[in-house]
Length: 146
Ligand SMILES: [Zn+2]
Ligand SMILES: [Zn+2]
Image (tube, rainbow, N blue to C red; front, side, top):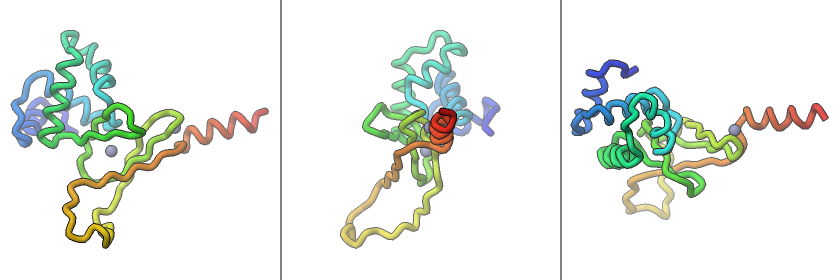
């Protein structure tokens, strides 16, 4: 856990980012809530702690974080950008009922398709869509009680 201000500062400095109060607060939120939040989610969650926070400042911070590699920007279902503090290769499952996004490990050793021989691959996105376990249970429960 990165709970102390010093640890958070160090985290940002490692990415060549000058720590400011808002950057530290957003980083702390992301590390403690790895739920792939949108800029809106971040804004709403921090409003209580930082009444002076603006949406623009959240967007600017997230642009900077994405630029420096602190977060990965993911877009699922072509909807708004979500931010992922887990920048290691992993896949996403998006539940189309509750809209939650789940991480699952993905090996970086997947063979490169031969059609892409000689190509430079910068990024791999693995996105699955469907209904999560929880939503599936709720759905089934609803039907069985009829
Ligand atoms: Zn769900
Ligand atoms: Zn993720």
